[in-house]
Image 1 (cartoon, helix red, strand yellow):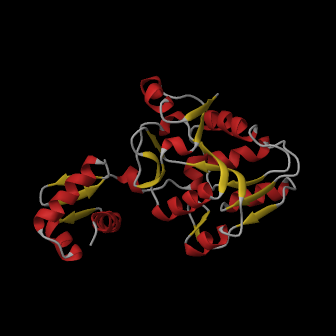
Image 2 (image 1 turned 135 degrees about the horizontal axis):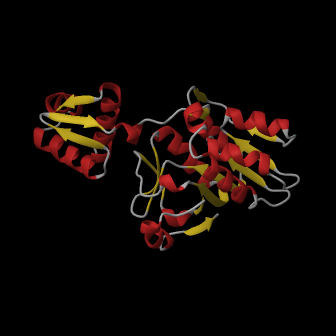
Image 3 (image 1 turned 90 degrees about the horizontal axis):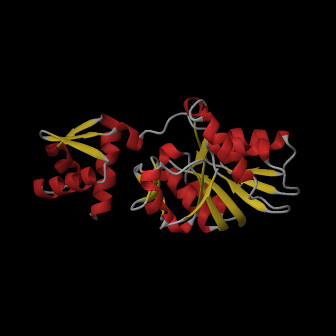
Length: 248
């Protein structure tokens, strides 16, 4: 079994139980104690778990995605700034992908471009787009109840029916070394595929996301333009060296 496969299983078991013992991981992975300990050290160095006596515990914020209702009331003013900046990047007649999430949802009232077509995996998004009479397609697949995002293999396959001029993605972390990250590997797959199918990618991230690292990587910083209300000064140089920034 490859290292990344073992690490994925370790995080999955931690998500299920919160705390796991080394012996349990040895049985799960069919690996030696030294191999399991090396994996735990590696995951701890990536801020994905905490080693404890005889095992490991999960750092909750790395793998647990806040619900849509919870995120709606966080960082409202920065999100509105970012949403306006993002909507201003649209040109008449473009076909775009709009990722699920509260910041991308906040874009919709600010859209002024004419004749655009939108593909989204956000249930709330398609409702808002239809109310504005913007032609929209909702991906099919499995709906995550607490984020109202469509994910999974069916959604992934659906995406290959489209090509986008631009895509607008949310993220949980923006880090100079680890790039853009999100807690859910399945959501990461959808975001990454949207990026691959787009002529240009924008990642929407308020200042609280900078310097954070979640479990699943989307892609490196240089592969997208980040839109934010402000980059924290302590991180400005390292981020600016890696990507283009649109800042409010």
